[in-house]
Image 1 (tube, rainbow over the protein chains, first blue to last red):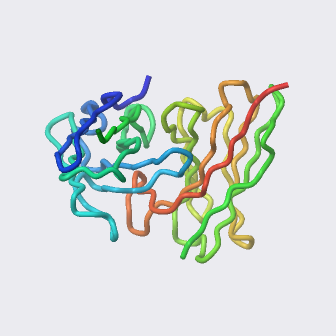
Image 2: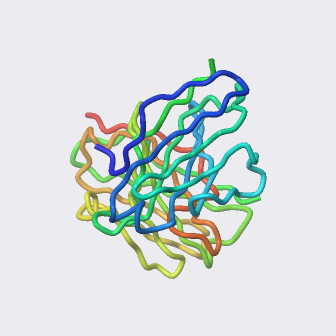
Length: 111
Length: 120
């Protein structure tokens, strides 16, 4: 069982907005603003999309946005496109178990 | 452009040691943290550990007793050793760089990954 909880799947039609949640505990998400999000297409390495809750690396579309409330971090994709169909993983700094914990991953399907 | 490339045996026998090397090109290994992350087939990501170019390390407690990560700055490489391998260690293994001035959850460059199967 992963340390961070994500829904197994989400879906949306092109142009819609979708949100993926990532629920942790007071030992990780709640306490630290050190949550990142990764996009992984089949057979490819993960790609950093969001870091430090809501910052985007250079080159990542501004359609990707991150936020946090309490124990839960969220990734929102505005105006979802076919190319966004992929697995998404959240990642947080943690102190109770391991320094770095990942969520179980969420498969985004673009209808 | 920084590139990372994993190398090592794709098949390891149970109870033997899994050994992988990550070669960094297009940039120096110095001044960065470097990590190993794995992904069992069809499953999610698991952080294994990281090493600073100076040699200091931190490991996932669930693997700590079996893992060693080392660095060779002269070759711009860092390595992973996982002892007493079992079928549960079968996974795609990725090496990754922690972003400069970033936190340990911020992996900005990744290798393509290499599948290691533990089987007799």
